[in-house]
Length: 347
Image (tube, rainbow, N blue to C red):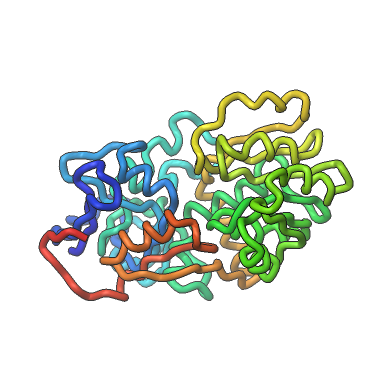
């Protein structure tokens, strides 16, 4: 079984491909999945560098997000059947309800084995059936970025028609949030780094865009666009470098959904109390969130925005493309794009 492995915390350069035995016989409640695709997230860099998660003696199998086909089920399995096209949930032990300290401590690709392997055996509760109109690569885009965006919009204070939302950049979470916010009838304001990227976001449905290079005080621009009030919801993905402006761009009584830490962990936000906005961390989401999102995707025939697709052996190249920040939407690994095999070679 072709498996991508990182044995040392040296980032992308530590990745090798190994041939490993397929998982053994199924236990109660388990299913065997032939993995067909993965997608990548910024957290994969953190795991490969040793910043998050643990790395056992067998090394780290990277990437949390994957989709495939059920090829075998244990006799007691009822949720899934052979032939079902499924995606794996990000938090295997979070079925529904509020997040708790014991929920989602171990996630695939940073504590549990990730999805960069040709077969996986998991409990039936760890997978959800994909909408039929999506291919495996589109399905693999959903578990982290898609569910995070859905949960950010539908969490403690759901986004309603006529509300306004501020989104940052063109990464997977922000583009999913754009797509979902427009389904909900919300007004979407987005920031990005160039006129060309802003035009692309408008073509995807953004109502207004702000070039944060040309307008570094983009919180002031957001206030101007909203009559001085600020937006109802900001989905914050930047972290330390952007959180203060995100709070300043959000109306009194509004909400900042804290999703990403691209520029590091934010310190205490001095303006939080004076601004009167609440900050709610988003821990991706539960299986219930995933299935609710899939119902909306299915009904509206929504398709994830895929920036680019790479083969199995091209994971390092895909990760470097993500690191460049030039992508828009999700970067996908299609397993069947490359058939070459190796016993253990550097990637």
